[in-house]
Image (tube, rainbow, N blue to C red; front, side, top):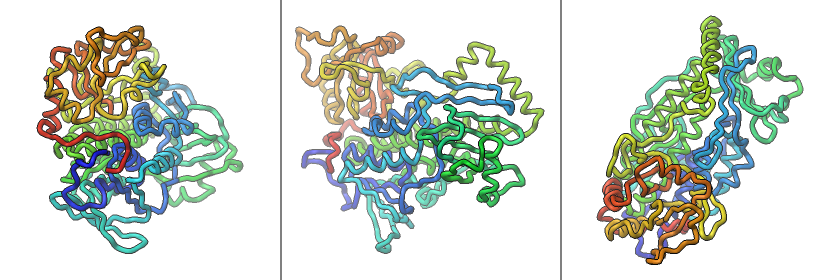
Length: 556
């Protein structure tokens, strides 16, 4: 991560800077991001290979943006269906609600079908880029011993018991997390009284695109088209049906019979799931952190379990990188819980609400529900609200690794910044994140940012490896200021007015963007230095003199 020999070494002679427990999507995404930041990482997983049973089928725009940041979006896109329609129907197949968000403000479609085992394979294969990242299957973590400057993990594997040491541990080992239990962290919430049988079928016998949720009080079910000719069915098991029943082939085919010629379908896999709604009492315990299902579990109804884990990975990875290299104080890791807990809890609440609505078994109550949803679909504003998915909670951090300078209820600080297509002097068209690079960026609209900030702010930005950008209408791209432009300042051209429209709507013209593209600070031009100083204080970096992440992916 840091390319020069003056980089600080760990206090303890550890095997890795970060050990990740669990090779699911959250752990693998974290490993890819940490690998790209140059952090020595080991992934331990008790299984013998990647999991291949049916799991997530919905990927949102924020997750695709994270794949983009990890340098893997082109590899995962072939396993997705962009702009996937989601329709809720009653038992007679009449529409109750349609979700078809047309916008892509963050650079990618808001709803995408995908095949999780193939996406996980993309993440796993991506780690081959990094000689300083090691994935070890068949390694079961049996205990944790914390020291002031490292954590020792007791591991049982093919070679017998051994110890792995790290400066930090990220537990991404699922709902039954050994990591969470080892720290004595609570996992409060509830579990659904109903189980669901999930079935994946090859050579899609329906072929119809989209995802359909049938709120049939006799037996709610889901039918989803996913890439590569796969059809996903999910059926609620009734009170007198058991998981053992669901293992029988004749039972599975009986459920499929009303929908397809069950005798002819090619069943790839099937599995029984229980929907849980739980959240850990803390996402951090000293040098041990939790992410993904180890930190929170939610029902599948909004497809946010997978996506929430990826949000965790992005949020915590750049903070771990800064803590490891000393470009921020260790307390930056406390902001991970501050920033992720509220949003994860909101997603759990939304998923539970949707699940309760879909799973109604009373025909009288279901009829009232159906009438309500059909009625509001005739109200244009309500229809727009549903179709565009405005009900989905967006990440909005109110405290954490953020500048408090000029904080107001209308401030964009803590929000995810847009990602339009832009032009630079070197590229005819690029998504904004690609133009900015993978780390911090200071953007100034219609100004040279180097002329706006004082020496202290500039020294801090240089120390953390932030890049400076002057943002202009694209027609001004080739203009050079007669006063001379700082050679470190790069110019971005706004091609379609998206960036100008954003700045038109906000009084702040200078933005500090974090690696996860959350707005870390925002200020009018005259207050840019104070805003940067406030962010430096928030991450405990005022007196830190360590070199910044090089983003080269080199081993430190």
